[in-house]
Amino acid sequence: MKFAVIQFPGSNCDLDMFHAIQDELGQDVEYVWHDKADLSGYDAILLPGGFSYGDYLRCGAIAQFSNIMSEVKKAAEQGKPILGVCNGFQVLTEARLLPGALLRNKNLKFICRTVALEVVNADTLFTGEYEQGQTIQIPIAHGEGNYFCDEETAKQLEANNQIVFKYVGEGPNGSLSNIAGIINEQGNVLGMMPHPERAVHEVMGGTDGLPLFRSILKQWRESHVSHA
Image (cartoon, rainbow, N blue to C red; front, side, top):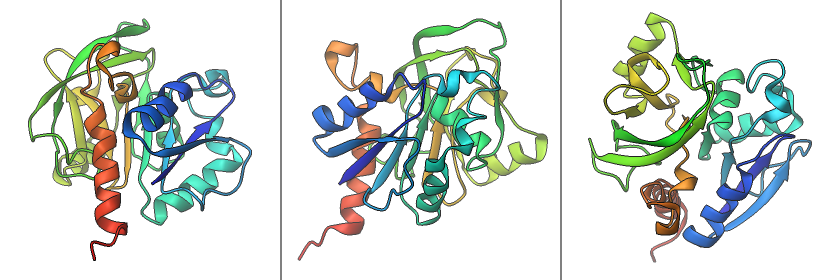
């Protein structure tokens, strides 16, 4: 399986994502610069965290206009797994690949710590290696992670089981319904504020993020690799 890690000016978690795929998952991975216009050679697309274009207008707002995003949209339409983490989640909402928006944290401060997440939906291509309702420990590092959407959208997310992760207990950033990660209706685009790529080895403090990447790989193998 071959992964693409999209790099925007200001991305700073691309190396972490690359390491998670190459060294912990053992799969092919390449960096893809934002001005490229072809993702046809990749099986999964990863949008890492950071400060794309400096977040000078609004987090992810400028990145949505990059050449590569039209290709990300095509990949999403083709059913390829698309994962956006932190700033990547913000980019996905700005590009309307996911509903809602990420606002400033409720306390108006940057938050960097490990938090407990509940796996609300374990029946996705990103969470198949988790148990339903499982609590996992994943780091966060963001200033604009406060997820918000209108009431109708919130009802749709609940009804369609599109809420994948929730913060356990009092949420760190004020997100609606403690939402930490959501998926599109098709089920192949996941956006989340916590960083699973920073929890893939014991030296990093834990491995609770690794099953997410293993889930992607398992689903791809079941769909594409012959068992003859």
